Length: 302
Ligand SMILES: Nc1nc2c(ncn2[C@@H]2O[C@H](COP(=O)(O)OP(=O)(O)OP(=O)(O)O)[C@@H](O)[C@H]2O)c(=O)[nH]1
Ligand SMILES: [Mg+2]
Image (cartoon, rainbow, N blue to C red; front, top):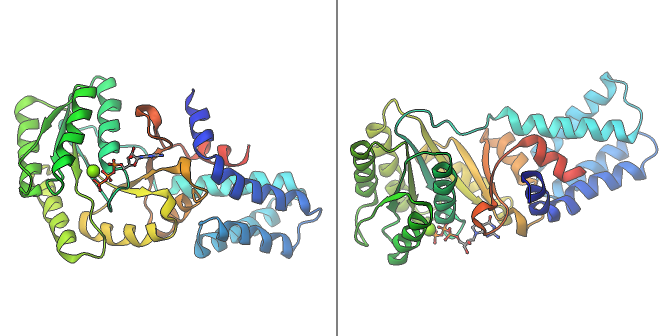
């Protein structure tokens, strides 16, 4: 299955709710009226785009329709797609991993898909000829290291582990040292799941991030928040708290395949300026896809 088809299939539920809802409203209205905008707004709000972001989108849409003298539903739809695409790309995009070594830190609440994403990313970069080293900094769960070890075997990446209960910041430190000694290109650090409102765990994360900032000074750092798309608006609270502890550079949005809440991608970029870097659309190794705003929006409507 090609890239676009995967995204399309992964976004099927969101497409039905959001894309289908918006298209439905547009074809039901023969004329462009205030009611049309109200109904579009309602579909967006109920599809987890969030109130602020939905209002902003309709505001931009009104202005564009007026300025470009758009008169038909198709024209409004094209404009809506353009506005959404721009909102998704305005926050930036793409991974910046040009230094040797560079590092990807994966953080987030429990069970969102951090370890799976670490493994899948190892596979993606190894396939591009990069020497990857995994850091098993989830020392909280005994099985976490083994889970990552499996991905290391599968992808041919090196891995640095420690005993359960070890200080995760020191595992990260050791992984960076090993990466330098072995000439690795990309370090990928998995971390334990933590609730964003648990102060001690967020302090632990801040310590991990401090080690990375000092040991990787001048190197490319991707601090990625992994978010489960099925959580909808609560993800925004997670984004706010994790951003404080570990200076996020972007988001990995997993489990899009199981939810109609994909619209939250727009709220994340609009409200927190966080680019979506990867999306997970299934459990298979090739189900993690680099985010493409144009394909994302096209998959919602076409
Ligand atoms: N459907 C679907 N399942 C996913 C996706 N990403 C991860 N999963 C599944 O989600 C479950 C949890 O994934 P993990 O990678 O273990 O999550 P984690 O964040 O490391 O969990 P903790 O370490 O316990 O906090 C696994 O069963 C994964 O296969 C996705 O994009 N789609
Ligand atoms: Mg894990």
